[in-house]
Image: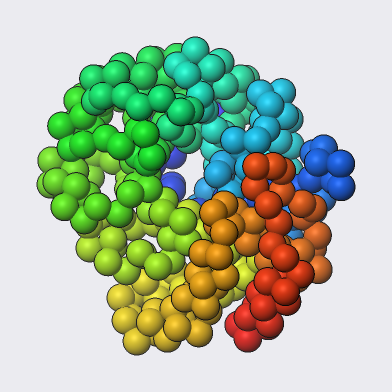
Length: 304
């Protein structure tokens, strides 16, 4: 049974930082349930507004539907109502609907609707795709505007008119003009979530556009730093935000940008660097080199 009606979910998510935990794997790349539970238990002592299981940082794109169901059920069980758990839905429309319905059956509180794989689509097709998923479930839906599923302001307006349970918009583009247009047209009908890789980089400017929260990948391994940074953003403490960007976030980005896919790999490496081994990433991602892990470990030591 879900704990949050869609409108309640939207209201809850805007109250704090959002957690996107990594998914733990064994050496043979199978799901490490015990490690994942331990990670969620550790993170649960910190105050966040929601947990997104098997999202992008959680390598949801590499999981089978059965594995996604297992990860979501594990998260729901471990979190036990402390915060809402949101599950992914992705792939083609039929696949996304099946995942949405499985998530509801698993006790998830909401959905993150990710872009469909590979194919490009026009706005009308995207509207019908999102609407079909929304109709298939009573869960609150967060639509992720990114990659091959970038929604414009007219499309978002139509979607919220057609789908009462579409309650959050996650931006993975960073187009200031488009976000301004969307907020001007839609206003507070939606909760707006920052969803660019290493969202801390964009948090302060996007705050002015109604994006009051974001997905923090670094919360996985420097939770106190991540929460302190978020508090500085909300307080619009520019001096502290830019000091922390220079001290940690920008050097972190320099490591992240060495290889495509490192936006996920570096997070899992960070968890391992603090002594809470999360296992390797699955192909086609690749793990950081030993030298890069050493650089990251030194960087983490400066802010812990």
